[in-house]
Image 1 (tube, rainbow, N blue to C red):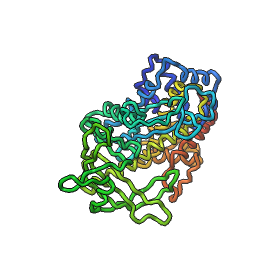
Image 2 (cartoon, one colour):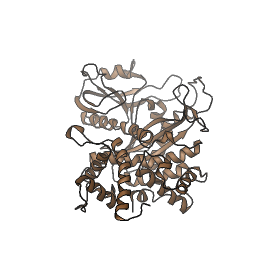
Image 3 (cartoon, rainbow, N blue to C red):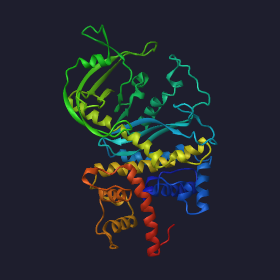
Length: 453
């Protein structure tokens, strides 16, 4: 059984033929993620069947993703604590004028759709799969009117609360789940929303919320003012990931933590909330570098410096959901799909979700568990091809490969040099490598007289 068949064993699209088509489609897309559908399909009939699958109104996007989510929950059960890393991204279809039902985006004169994803991640940074995903297109007419009294249920930001509830219901109650999110999730109603035991929040602060300090609780301050008065508990060195605005580097961070009682926003009929605050601040950044400053709000207990260090490490994995969206857009080329309507794009997105997760999982599984059995990474045929290319020999490989051997061999096909200074292979060289591996496997089959279907 291939990894795709194992991953989609819970698929229920209302017809066995649809389930088979989903498996076939994911196999094709994962073999060469960056290629268009016409490039992937080996016949006009196959291409037509793929487009018909995405156009089928009897198939719901959430049902496609549900099969992957069910397998994700199986992987979750092997862990005591998992992270639900949430973020929102845009799919920009401004250049595709014929697309229907698109909405305005954050940038002027752009049209497309919004995607909010909860990616499940282990506490050592391996993506387990997508737990929930919400897609929507904004109304065609943009309004600039802001109503602070509008109920949270009627706001776009309600997606954070809604996704939190979905994740809590999905994760078994005996497993701790920590929602990790950037400043956009700093919503008072999210902290005030009831949570099941074992469901916690780790959110980067955006608003300078009011807190009461002093023995009598009558002194008023902001969160930043209050935490700045706390004595540092220690220093840690963090590996900062590459971002569009920053190169990867190490940063020495001074850590403070305290429990504060934040006050509800003015005009909100909500009660004050006692919450733990962690401030991680780079006091001496390199010349001409912006200092790192993370102000985190968490419902997790922070009783020691080790607790604070652990939660800062967990927060650093928030970057993975951005890499996931990047993989969808740059690796899977989701914004270049020639599909005309929102519902078809949503079905295609749910299908590509599985492909993008697998790429990201390969990347970080090789870093965190390099010596695991690589039999789940490649088929025997693919390993034969990789081994032959690596050793310039047609001999059969001896023994099963490790995860690291498989991923490095694929990455080298994508341009990874594998020198000590190169570090670990990234997701970009992996998707390029898979495309080339697909071509080599087809050539190998022709050479040994096996069909390419």
